Every structure is written in C-alpha cells, then in structure tokens.
Image 1 (cartoon, rainbow, N blue to C red):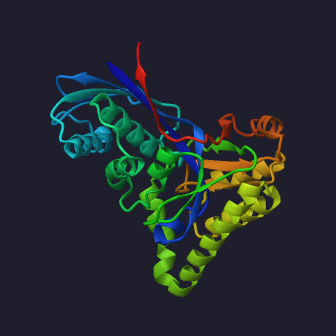
Image 2 (tube, rainbow, N blue to C red):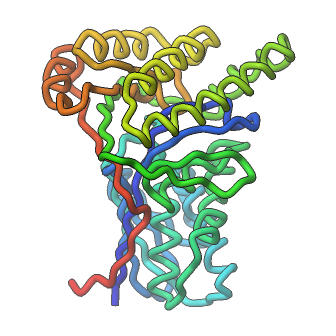
Length: 316
C-alpha cells in the first residue's frame, strides 16, 4: 500500500519581509511543487531523488535532510506511531529560489506519511507540523509558505491569524524567472531588518504601508484590476530594492520583464537571489515569455491552482 501527496510551491505577490514584522502579505500557490510517495517500512527512511541523498532515521541523517527528518519525527510523535515509513521525494521547484520548495516538501511529507499510517490530519495540523522544518531552515518564519502549500489558491496572510482565501473572478497567471542563484531567506531577513534598528519609526510606517498595499492588492487581483495590481507590485519592488534585498541580477530580470511587455515585475521571496515574478497583460503570457527568454532561458508561466496539498492512494 502506497500513498502519494503533492503540495504546490508559492509566490509572494506583495509583502515579503514585512510579513515577519506583522504586516499582511498576499501570496499564491503555483502549479509546480513537491511530490512524496509513502509506504510502510521496517524503519523510517527519506529518499530525496533531487538531492541524491537518503536519510535513515534516527541516526544516519545527512545535514541537508535534517529539516525533513525532524519533521517526520515530529509527525510520528504527534500521531503516536511506532511504525516506520519510507518516503520518496521529488520536486520541480528550484531549491533556494524563493518559491517555497522546503515548505512544499514538508507539507507533502507530513500528508503522505500520516495518510499511509491511516490518519487524516486537519489543514491546521499539517501547517504546524511542516513548521518544524521551516524553523530549522529560516529561523523565525512567518508560516506563510506551509500555509500556501496546504491551502492553495491566493491568500491574504498575517502571522498569527487564520489565512484569508481570495476568490478570483478570472484565473491568474504570472511569469517566473529564476536568477540561477540561490539565497538564504534568514540572512536576507536579517539584512532587511537592520532598518528596524536604525530607523525604527520609518520602519514601522513601512510595515503598516506594506500591510495596506497587500490588502489593496488582494482586492485588485480578486476583481481582475491588473492596472492597480501592477502599480502595487512595481512600487513594492522599488521599496525592496532601496532596502538592499534585491540584486543586480534580479534588477536586470525585472527590467527584462518590463521590456518584454509585462506590466509589473518584482522579486519574490527572500531576495538577494532566487526569482522574479512578472505580471503579463491578460492573454499575452506566452508572448511575454518568449521575449523574456531572449534574456534568460530559465523562465516559465505559472498558473494558480485552487487547491493546496492533495493525497491519493497509489495503486502502482
């Protein structure tokens, strides 16, 4: 008996960095993600196809698989399970690209492992268990990544509150361009947060402004008002760049996206490296993508799936 779970990655449309400090952020799931196939086993094993690594719990755990191993331990303890599980993982999200690869993997792992052991977890339980790895990787995460991977769709998120789903009048598409360089979210957040100590009042006003812009962006994307959404995204990029969390490469990708006919472009995630998201004119995603690929080969269109993590019994 095997169960397979698939969890989507994410983009942050508005509000990265600020969300850690209490601001609202607007985020969306994407139609790329992580897949975990689970089967019962004599011992608990995690096999990462992408990294070419295997962890055999409790002792033989490579450093790069430690967050996932700790998530599995926490899941088994939470379920009060003594049985072992074998988890085979793969992903089509670039690692350290700001697209929520670690959270998608953790959410899929928790869901697949609990399902093969005969348990059905609530969404809130999946998020909390997936946070085990997020805390190891990111230090003080907001929780937005596992929330998006679990619930899917577009959501308005604020740390400590239940995420608010945003209903769209029409499907949403973005273009993602990968810079080719990874980044450390925790390091970029620390760099960003320096302004909190040097200019505390200014920083506080920025947090509040970002929160308001995220709420306005949520209304705009819900109604299909791409003009307003684009204005917010472009302004948000300028603010993030001025605070030192963009880079020469990301700025050049933003320029390439705008030059290709997109109406907005900005970094997504931690910054420093990772990805840029671009908002094309409605119905012109493929045209803009073709033009962008003259500057970067690693770009693709993403759609926003309505659902989050899914699990099914695998009969193969």
